[in-house]
Image (tube, rainbow, N blue to C red):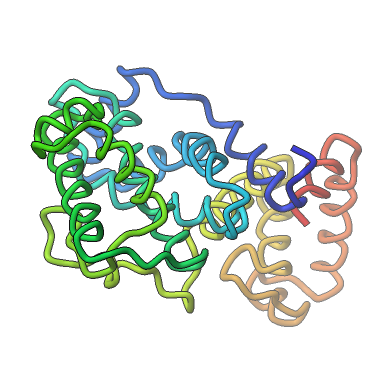
Length: 275
């Protein structure tokens, strides 16, 4: 793991802290999601982050940093949650693998080296992608090379070559699912936070919230206001004192007491990893 930078290593450790879901836990989460529980969506994401990383690692050293590959894989993860039907009996990871890989391959196509194919081969690559997509939706898994050859009525050797080409070349105009949007239209907006950034920020907030539980209610309230955990903006002593109904000196005293608690050895290492 030391070949990755500190942020990626931290992210991998955080992702690994969420256990792999059992089949029963998975079904329960998707039932909650179907019932309108939005928190179930976040739980599905958290428990599958390590799966995205596992897939992304297979694509390193192809011209795109691992952090970006993970980010794109997370885009695929967020999309496939909406498509998955737990009633069909197959595991979520089996179904999601294709969509996560496709999102990563699109990133390689967009940011890595570009390959120009003859028209006939380009069409076959697009056709094989559509065939795989349809098969995954109907069967919850990717087809074997033999199955692809039979479905497309071509030789298995050609299927193998097309699959290798497909990892590097994707048509930005092809529709890859039952929606009307093309792959080009699904390229994420770089002006907004990426799923990777969102996941890391969410995990950091969860860790901080857990550590703040050692404080009294008043201490926790003041620390949140002073350091931006309440509304995302750090407040001055004067504004904080108005909100909590204490003098500025009273706020300062409580803040010092709270920080002294958080400096205890048991919290120091956790805080260092987050700051």
